[in-house]
Every structure is written in structure tokens, then in C-alpha cells.
Amino acid sequence: MNYAGFGKRLLAYLIDGVIIGLAGGILAVFFGYYFYLIFGWLLGALYFILMEGGTWQATLGKRAMGLIVTDMNGDPISYGTATLRYLGKFVSSLILGIGYLMAAFTENHQALHDKIASTLVLCAAPAGNTRYSSQGAGSPAPPSMASPGTGRCIVGISGEFAGRSVQLLPGGTMIGRDSVACQIALSASAPGISRHHCQVNFNPQTGMFIINDLGSTYGTYLMNGIRIPSGQPAALRPGERFYAGSQANVFEVR
Image (cartoon, rainbow, N blue to C red; front, side):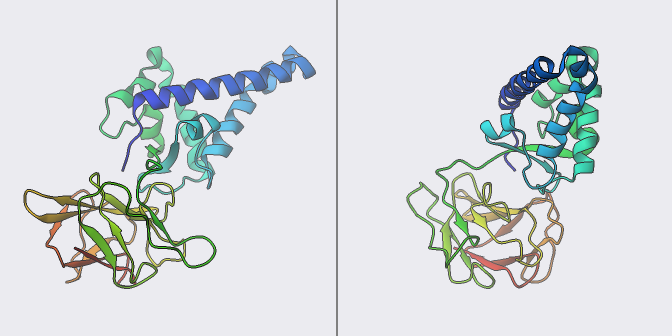
């Protein structure tokens, strides 16, 4: 997963602060200062909870910086989780905002309120990345091969990606349902596929492919049925296959 760094998160926070400040000023002008004092906090709460919860996944500030809020599996968070995350920000603000500063030092760049709500802030994939998407009208065209790659590829054997191939990128190629972050983005109807399911890399020194499960719900498997534990990469030789979620989604590395 491409975790958002502290700098981007800070800029997104400042943008959101300007937006909420302007909205609060409008409330004060039209309804009076006391109305703003009573209901201004509700404006901020609704802004963060409604925009970060559900399918939107980001405030306007985060969208401007190309960031999204997810659960630990990379899936959208519920409004209940978004509420817990928002309330956790009050805890993050204590002791000179050290809870916010934690995003600069923790392994997954989680602030304290992220840890409280079990959420992540992720960067979207760069626009220039090679990407296949099964979503949208008509039959999807094969992905462009213009982006620099490793000379290796992933080929679909069964499922929506069957008969297609995508070049493996130097930073790895992600498979999942997120059409923004994943280079192979399957539809929501693809059986057993999480939003960010797994990632495939190539090690030129060993000549082996490395596959990482990204905490998917239904797992990533070798063809002998062994499930790849999340956080414990497995090595594949060129020509070997794996499946994501179920054998309806089989891929081969070449």
C-alpha cells in the first residue's frame, strides 16, 4: 500500500481548515456569531464524517492531494468508523498535537486517531501508471505499455482479466477493486476480491516474482491451495500461477 506521508497530510489538513473556516464565516455572517458558536462544531463534524465515510473516502483537502481514507484492508470505512476517527482527532490534539505528529514517524504513517479507528490514509497511484480496469461501458481495451516497466508481466488465466496481460511496474503492480490505486482493477462483482487485494513485484537479482497479500478478506493463494499470509511475501518462478479470492481469478507471472 502507498501510505500518505506527513507532508501531504499536513497540506490536506490546511486546505480543509480553509474550507471549514470559510463555511463557518458564512454561517456567522448570515445567522450570527452565536449561531456559529453553537452549530459551527457540527459543520466540521459532518464535513469529515460524511466525506471520509462511505464511497467518497476523502475530504476536499485530501482529494486535492490525491489521498483517500481506508480501513486496514484498503476498503472504504463506514460512517461509524469515520465518526470514531473524527472523535479521535480530539485526542490527537492533546499535548501540542503530538497525535497528529505521529503520522511522520509510525510505520504506516498513522496518526493517533488513525490507530484509534484502525484506519489508513493512502496515496492514489500516479496517473502515469499502467492500469487495466474492468469497469465501465463496453469491453476494456488492453492497457497501454508506454510506462517504463520491468519487462515482466501478469497474465489473466480466468475471470474478468482472462486473456489479458499488464506490464509489471518497477514499484509493483497491485490487484484489487480500487480503480484509482490498482493497476489491475476488477469490478465489485469479481468474487472474493478486496479493494486492495495483493501486489506483485519482481526481483531481478533472483529472477523471482514476489507476491504480497495486502490483508485481503478472502486471501491470495498458490495453486496448491496454500494461502499466502498477509505480510509474509511468497516467491513465484516465471510461469507459475496464483489466484486471488477464489480460482475464478487466476493469474500467471511471466
